[in-house]
Image (cartoon, rainbow, N blue to C red; front, side, top):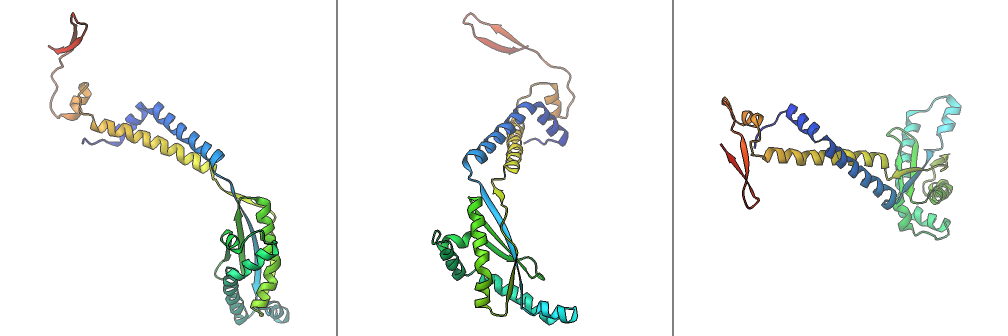
Length: 239
């Protein structure tokens, strides 16, 4: 297999620019149609709560400072509350609060619960689904039962709702990025096809091909003539 440098790659690309671009456009159109007609949109809404051990505000009011022990206790509660909010029982209660419309096994997978950072008292909660209105209702109903549920499970914890679910964001399909990726992929695949064909080509078509293949002087070339026979066939003869 012959070697090819960057300049030759560029020349090969330019010489086949039309089919390469058409291939990219075709793939982009297919990707757009897939996102528009086949993929079902997925939405996400987010909320957050603040968790502390109940002595945080009192400590600040008394001394205008928060002791490291109070903060450590609150941070520990955050980790524990995340575990509580990912257990089955709270989703069973949520199922009842939603009138039994969903089983708890359907509710748990659509929730994502995590602490905002290692040293944060915030817990972020997100709900994912196909209906914006429905996931906002589920998220806000969840927020209604969270403070009481955590208080009953972990009495030192004090929970405050920081943000209700008021808006949603579409997370799937990512049409723009998918179309761009498909366009580039189509161009690359088409170019690779032309590159493979060029590398596998063994025919010497002109003087440039001969000089590229052999490091010897070229004195001249013999033209090929075509003679028409009585049967109408053509034969190429070198003279």
